[in-house]
Amino acid sequence: MQTTRLGVLELQEFIRAHDIPGEIIHLSVPTPTVETAALAVNTLPAQIIKSILFMVGGQPVLAIACGTSAIGRRVIADLYGVGKKRVKLAMPAEVLEISGYEVGAMPPFGHRQPLTTLIDPRVLDLSEAYAGGGAENALLHLNPQEILRVTGARVLDLQE
Image (tube, rainbow, N blue to C red; front, top):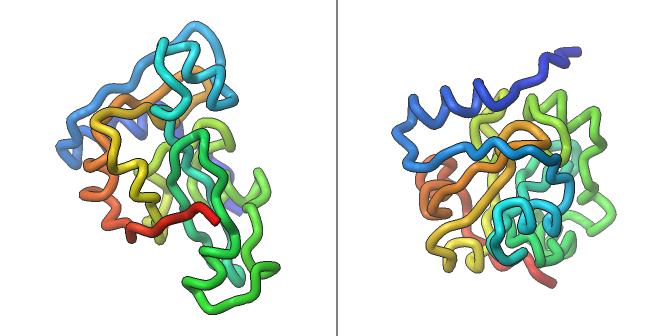
């Protein structure tokens, strides 16, 4: 089992290698929740985006949504033609194993392996946003269109 943690340095390298305009902001406080992240960078919770890893019939699928939005498992289940019970939140150990990042620090890209990615259109309505920055005290500041460009994500309304 591969448990090497990726972090801010690996994310910074990915950003540089893929010419992604954006910056990693190092914070003096951890940002484990959307609310603490918004307070740390003095912005609205709606401008914080979350990257949540689901297991769909045993396969990893990354869902990216505005931090204040709930991600509907039914929507993902319908997309893949499986029952809602086959769409499960990845366990923290699975998140680390698959992405290389810990829950709460996961960026929208730059993972250990390319991930099938779904992105809510509301994220793309933002001109700037903050995402996981590879560590609990780092956030990535960028234009969400870059996530779409780099991941080739499928745009899907993730709210039920």
